[in-house]
Length: 494
Image 1 (cartoon, rainbow, N blue to C red):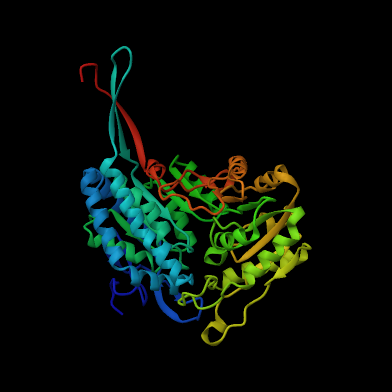
Image 2 (image 1 turned 90 degrees about the vertical axis):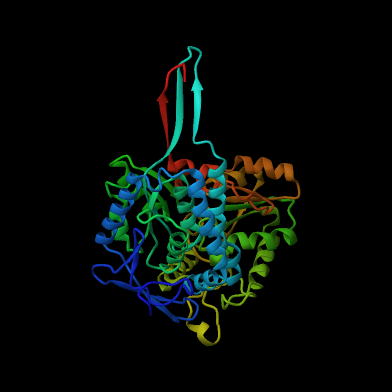
């Protein structure tokens, strides 16, 4: 395989990392073996960065930022590079989608529609935003004192991203950071390191100056070193709440800026006037996207006790009809989990659910698949009923295709149960009465709510209440954490 990655494929051996615009062989030669979780096919060995590469990446980012080669470029100049990078990524969409599906295991149709396409969609959004955004305004008071308030890039950004979104999530962070004029270091996880190289290639090919971006896959220890680095001005992290707490503590030591998008245990509140024939086909994709490996997955299904058995039966039938199999087949709705470690975690929760006294309605094991798929990291879509909201399977993020059906009596208890969690990321309300559903949605302590499965408008903020995070990504809200306001007193005559 070539020493330097090419845009022809995401797959293959990757012996180098991208440090400040240059492909660099890590100092200790450590690599991670990447396999297709559906078939165990060997996709390549990827180099992992060390502390030495992180030091070099941060130094390159600091030098480029302080030089002004990007931080003092005009918004129009930055937008031109981002637009060009978006065009390059869109041209490479088939390659990106296929490679991501093989690396992560999500269905190919989902890779095309969301994972890969969002990478260039985010770039275009923030390129257009800075073309129209005012980065300076004049303010005067009644005495005539005048200040110019500017918005300046926050500095060097560390973006720590998760394995379940190896293209969209990194660009959710890099797009606003680069649009604002920051320099950045992206640290993808060892589980899915290959996709991030495509982002480095596209931005470099689009003319991003050397030093402004590094992409260095690394393990947790090296990631912790990056987060604590004195030259990193801001950290943007997506991952578990436990890791997010540690990152907050590390950033607090030097008062570094931080954005956290963390865990979720989101509730779908089905009201007593809802129609199962309308609810089930719409709620299952929101609950089981990426085989449940999504922080916004709505895995707590709150059902009115008066219609509990009816809705549990409908949910069970809907889950039996899901197609578990080859993620490259467009008929597949549920692909594999990302690796054996994640499947072991999910199967541990299946055992916990049984031990807690929940009733297993559907699933609970490994599907019987033929050929190469027989060895894949699959878990059956699983439904537990008679679940008490205090059970671990109702409170802890499982990150797999596991739903819990929780009964409630009356709207008041439904809202109380939905909010009875340390998380607050997403949720939904299902009813034939839109006004009633909106009233319920307004009482949910969560960052995003859907009424009857309606999609959020692109450009709406993503983020959570409580232990689901801090700050917001996407939309105009998404660029603000990468900017620092500065007030300059200029005198009444200015």
